[in-house]
Length: 316
Image 1: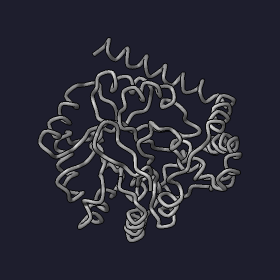
Image 2: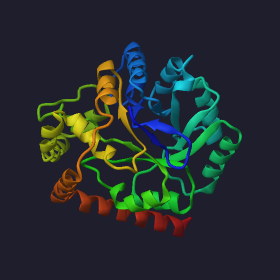
Image 3: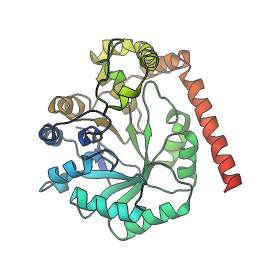
């Protein structure tokens, strides 16, 4: 396992982290707790030291709290404030209890609030020693600008995949300049970049968020994924190829991969770490992304987000 520094902090994160959404039994189908605990143990054995979870991931925090007994010092825990009926400090207190720990290594807000009181709550928790570092989970370039320009957090989490080059690449120079911790998520695009799905795939489990995709949406995703089949020739694995993409950028602190079985843990933490793509291959990928219109599409999404924030400031 390789380790990378999380921005300007003293945290050294395994370059692939344990994405704990799947073990919560919500959004990615039902799960066997014994298998989840075994997967976590295998991840630890292979050198993984970073877990990312959230209260909206079902029972994920509870399962992790059970697992971490007697081994808390081997792991760095990241979780999130997701809103709802509890305010941020109350939510954090309840999460500390579920995780059975005295401190959360990285506490994130599940979006990018523009209101300063949210960040003040984070700083207060930090001062109290209940969290070590703070961050946000963001979605677009204007979010990156906001948190970096105002020096609000220690790091952020962002989607980045072969099918989602923005906002990470659009702000890559700025990210390198400011040096925040960067957690990459969704590198497998809901599993579609894993090579496991085809036109006959049906998501029957109503607990699986992919069951809500239409046939047309699935076919569009599969068509886009097919344009990157050339990467399998390098790694002989769609999953490794998709994961190697964000790991090829030095600004990436860690890549979280959804894991709920021992088999997945062996791949995510035993085979993927250390994988990289050459500069020539990164250029080829960029050309394919342009051909698919991904850069143009995401530029439009960022534009709409900027307009939304502008009018929000005018009204509020």
